[in-house]
Amino acid sequence: MTDARKALGVHLFTATGAVFAMLAMLEAVQDDWSMMFLWLVVAFAVDGVDGPLARKYDVKRNAPIFDGVLLDLIIDYLTYVFVPAFALFESDLLPGWTGWLAIIVITFASALYFADSRMKTKDNSFQGFPGCWNMLILVLFALSPNFWIILALVVVLAVTMFLPVKFIHPVRTKRWRAVSLPMALAWTFFAGWAAWVDFDPASWAHWGLVVTSVYLLGAGAAQQLVHGRDG
Image (cartoon, rainbow, N blue to C red; front, top):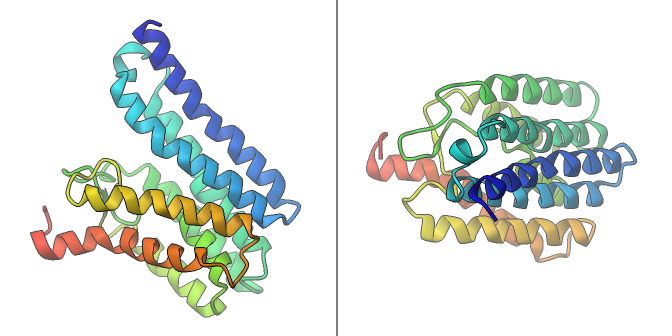
């Protein structure tokens, strides 16, 4: 198989994320949150794999007819932002006006963030919370905290999207990658497990989600404290 065909195959693989987003949305409109999140976990796994494949097969040079970055951003907005925000609004987690405020804040702030040219730092981390609302909202479904806690998390993370706070990319951020990549893989496993058991509160998957989420959420800021703002 030629390099051009391999690179084209990567683009086609990335595009499957749009299909998984639609499958997740179809489950969401039926209030089948477990199946919705299972499809989102599949999309999350695809997103974790397609980047390394795109770099390996140099899609910019071998399949330039498609813009891989743009394609990835479109799918990320659907699977990281749009579908999870809809689920948060339609569920019983946020009552009344709090649900409206959450979806407006999430969709509006994320649209701006995804178009921000300063999104990436020198070490391939993210500057500001990278709009991973799918991860946050899945954990919220698993833990079902008080709605004031949920609303506070949404507002704080939305504000953090535009602050000089670093969030790691588990694959591309080299520092601590030996820990970060296994943590991301573990999060994916625990997320799928939690959704598979319909967010049973007795499941050990919830503890795994908490531990891995705390690490992935705070590792970048910890690196800034240890190594400085540019570290």
